[in-house]
Image 1: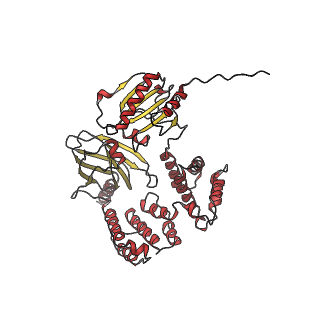
Image 2: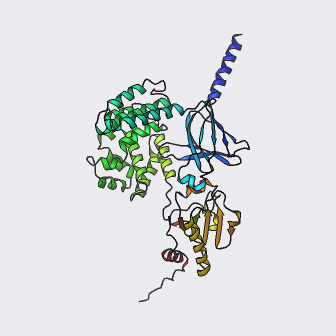
Image 3: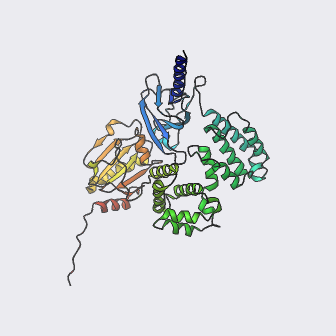
Length: 461
């Protein structure tokens, strides 16, 4: 009998644990039947870098369902036709969504305008983890609407202190759970920005225990303290000293020695996170290559695994399309640059039916090629969701193809506005992006890519 009870208890515990494992996201999106729906996992809140989990087709009833075998709490992005919604989900608490698809804005326009899908938690069937956080953010926004002047202009922090005290009595507030820590750190952001907390108080709150870098609330407070840190810390070191450090062969050690002069950065964990944040801010600046070396060293040499992952995510997500870098595929549907396109330079045109300039310039460049017999290729990518099939052509000189349904293609090329052009050399490397608009200067640049080099003349003495 006792053995049966033990086995029964074991089964109950096992079932309970298995129920908590795995994330379930399902729902109904009216008007989207037959469209692809994709689920992305946000790998960390600082870089917002994403990993594609799954893509499926919405059925004839508008229904979809995703299952992810994982534990803990994660933030996901759901995407339909480049329209996106973001949700935080906890394993074991199914998320059920409902909505009506907005067909008015799709494709590149939706991506450029950050257009949401319009999915919301089903009111009766969903254990929606984000709701208390959204409610908290609405209350926070209401406080700032009514008391911003008093808190930040008159320097009277009493409304902020009252709000903080009230929120700490909420059943969702604690300093242990993901949700509770999010609210705790957001209250810390208010306390620090309003003057209730000093920098020492804020750092104590952030680092009293090992920080959870997956929590966006933690990053909100950390970035408030250390964003644009170099510009704010001239009393400890100059920009000249920073540049000298990152130009050293062992740039990470030199940079840590320099930053260590700041008493707030004596702790290695704080110092490394400030370096990571500074590197992220500087990756598109004049010293980008040196900051990239700093991140590369951190990604392999940091004593903290979370820092190694974070540095690696920043390197992977930066993806700046600079001169000399291997270009993403100029054709949708290819993960890498196709070997079949190697050997000739390419002028790449991103086109859309709503962009009259793009269409005019695409026509101009194809006519220019016919007239001049330019030996390179012109590739026109139509970003319309429903581009006409009759427009799809391929000759030795011109390729025209629809890329409006390929969200990965649009992300890799970092398309935010049109018109947009790129020049790629015969080895598949970026020559110029964004490229010049069609005209004499562009034509000269393209012709130099295919002009035979003059043989080097030998001189005899």
